[in-house]
Image (tube, rainbow, N blue to C red):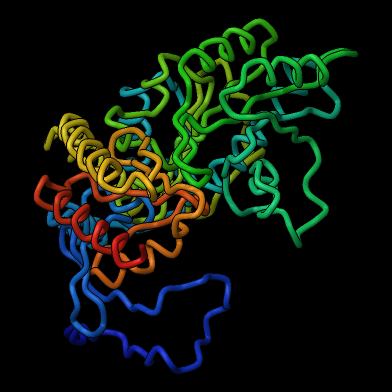
Amino acid sequence: MLSAPPLQSPVLPTLESASAVMDTYARFPLSLVRGKGVWVWDSEGRRYLDGVAGIAVCTLGHSDPVLRRNLCHQLGTLQHVSNLYRIPEQEALARAITSRSCADRVFFCNSGAEANEAAIKLARKHGHLVRGIERPLILTAEASFHGRTLAAVTATGQPRYHAGFEPMVEGFRYFPYNDIAAFEALLAECEAEGPRVAAVLLEPLQGEGGVNPGDPAFFRRLRQLCDERQILLILDEVQVGVGRSGHWWGHQRLGIEPDAFTLAKGLGGGIPIGALAVKASADHLRPGEHASTFGGNPFACRAGLTVIQEIERRQLLDHVNAMAELLQGLLASMVERHPQLLEGCRGWGLLQGLVLREGAPSAPELVKVALEEKLLLVPAGARVVRFVPPLVIRPKHLRKAVKRLERALERLA
């Protein structure tokens, strides 16, 4: 019997050496090689407090023992089979999602962009099938972010993401987020000569666009308008879903139910997985109309099941709400101490944004100096620094994080 070779760490090139990786990211000069809980270590042995969590991905933190154990077990059982066959882990994860939401069915894929692509196809099918539209329109918000694939980036209401990739996919129109008057005007314009709009695709809280929470009154009226015209309301929960808002789903904070919503990021706790969850009334996709080779394989679904089970077992929704209250208080106190630099803070749960004033250092500049203070954060545009730490973060970590951030701000000021 052959024994397994000893586990070897990858040989890391020096930061000065040429990389064989395509230059599609503006990376910080840092190689992270190990993590535990809310801490990560670089290749030089320096420890950092992680307020990024892989950009809202590592729900249970780094190297969580339960997730590690369950994934090791799954690797020893079955890691991947085709969707030509039923997959018990996939069935179980779909049931875990639908039993905790308004959805009845789930399609699995590998990322948020893929989940939104599936939602876009669903919307067009709905437009053809239900509203009789030949060339359906999807309405999305300015300052939104829905992914980097061509249709998803077209749905993104930020022209800077479109530059260089024209022509964009047809069939999208944009309106200001949370502005019901602007939405109604656009809807009237689009449907002046008959049905044209198949769906509205929105984030319950805009993450990349500046940590802008949805207005419940706006979303309630939007739900009413969509119901009146049989327009699908699809919510992009890729960043705010799976407990990050302090609820299972961000739309629960808005007091509405969507016809469909998309998930990714935190669902797998660091293992790539995406999902489109739909009500039965919106379940228009039929065999052969959409697919994903890796989508919903046993390994990824075991990760998703573990994340959901551990959120419940550890009562992390209550924990997120308690940590959010503490973090908001700490950030508000910081704003009071630096009113010339800071405008305020906003967000839900453990997705919080610190807003910098015009004339203050930019968010990318502040994030860069915070890195020197051994704190990882991520910008959300030019003026907002985003906190999206693991959901298991504790009070002492939040206090330490804000103290390090304030030192970074003072250094820049």
